[in-house]
Image 1 (tube, rainbow, N blue to C red):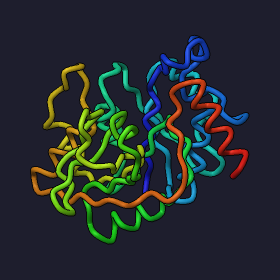
Image 2 (cartoon, rainbow, N blue to C red; image 1 turned 30 degrees about the vertical axis):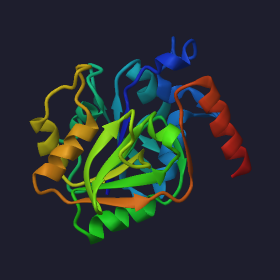
Image 3 (cartoon, rainbow, N blue to C red; image 1 turned 45 degrees about the vertical axis):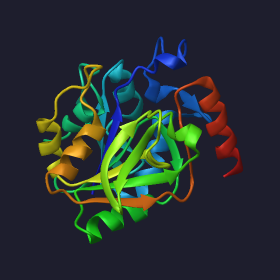
Length: 235
């Protein structure tokens, strides 16, 4: 199985660190952020497909054609037009099911369960989800459920429909590319991955979830870097 790693972002909230480098190369625990992403999924994948954008040639120069023994292919996202658009850039390279881990996630957890669940249940989207506090649910994407069925992902809701938050780790079937091609830009002008997952749910796609067992830090600020480094120090 291949891995799609969106890593095209500038990381504006990490300025001035990102004035002269992409977010993927910001140092976390003496390694580039992207190294942590690679190491999390390395045991499970045959190739990394890295989506680059802002100062992307620096990422290509830093990592080259492989990380340890795993090959890397790069695709470009020239415009910052959303996570779904980033994933779509990999369509011509991935074959069959693939796993996605966002390039700003320092995550240690049960990625293998996501892959096994996705394949065993012949799913179109499998989401690694984490039960969070109501306050945290209001600051990210949370699931809207109907019984045990995922209906959609709601971003930053004033009244969270659940406490199940997405973690930035997904497995998809090729049907996700049909979903992305079918959605329109959001109010902020971006093609949103939650909209593609909702399209799958409304059009006969099978959506599964896996409860997260581990820890993660989505690195957006200097405080997040400190949090990730503290967790890495304690294992």
